[in-house]
Length: 382
Ligand SMILES: Cc1cc2nc3c(=O)[nH]c(=O)nc-3n(C[C@H](O)[C@H](O)[C@H](O)COP(=O)(O)OP(=O)(O)OC[C@H]3O[C@@H](n4cnc5c(N)ncnc54)[C@H](O)[C@@H]3O)c2cc1C
Image (cartoon, rainbow, N blue to C red; front, side):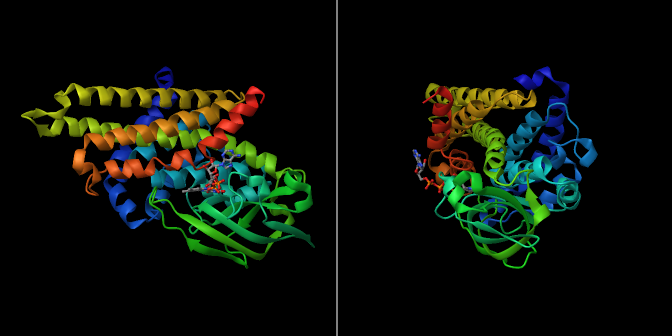
């Protein structure tokens, strides 16, 4: 693995893995059952400085040499404990804060980014709408220019951290007739008049992440809360941020796959049938080896994409491929893991069913497998 070449990354993982083992794993089942996004654990990670992994020291970040690889490992390790919790952290620490860091002014960074990196504020990012998912460019949320700013009207769907966020980067159009070129990013404070949570969504996967429908009804956003230099550049900026985020979604899949693999190995050593551990049956061993093969391929490719990002190289295809490889491998691996648990795999008191349920998220969040294939096909030149 790439991390063996690099002391910074190895040390980063070992500290984090201890926190995951001691703090997150013991709570993972209960968080899944209750569907609660843990503010307590979120704040703890902030106090430990993990939200600053991708950012420079001047704004309270960690100033790491391999920020993308380390954030990838953060998402992976947290997902090894709970993909639901990890998905909320991943959205906060990547796209929600990344858009302010890249395109926000100094005052916005001071008010939102700095406390967000300490875990004192929670961020979200909203592009998807009830009728604009894969076809995000068909969004209908409007930002009408008014004196001193904009007035936002519209509905956003599937927003991670939606009910708990203090601020949300919202994609909206200042001019629907301009299509993509009319789209901008706006930083909306959730205390703003006219903002409300339509509903918290109940779901069968990543239950301990918070997912919501959000309503914007005449929400005033001041001029200086529009992110980016030029009006109309928002869609391209969102696209850049979402491209990077695909690596982190792939990392969530790797972490969940690791957890499912570990659980299956452990169970194979414990469960006895026909007078011996089921792990002694070659059929089980082969299944475990196939799972490990999928896991290692996914991890290698995901780290490869993160390392390219750390070197400032293009990752359009690589991030999409990482998400396809890791997402689909994780889902297949979790099916195998569940089968090793036999009937106990269907019981809620064993974690195999949670790993399988959660494994659907990385194949959809941040763009479906079809859309990842479309992106790569375009890079090939089709
Ligand atoms: C738990 C969860 C959390 C999420 N968090 C966020 C968030 O924080 N912020 C946010 O903005 N969004 C978020 N999303 C939204 C997510 O990005 C979308 O669900 C995803 O992009 C797919 O959009 P859709 O659900 O509308 O599906 P649709 O776009 O309606 O797709 C339906 C089916 O059609 C296929 N399809 C669509 N277009 C094409 C095409 N051109 N070619 C081939 N097949 C196609 C798709 O692959 C899929 O199989 C989240 C989603 C989930 C489930």
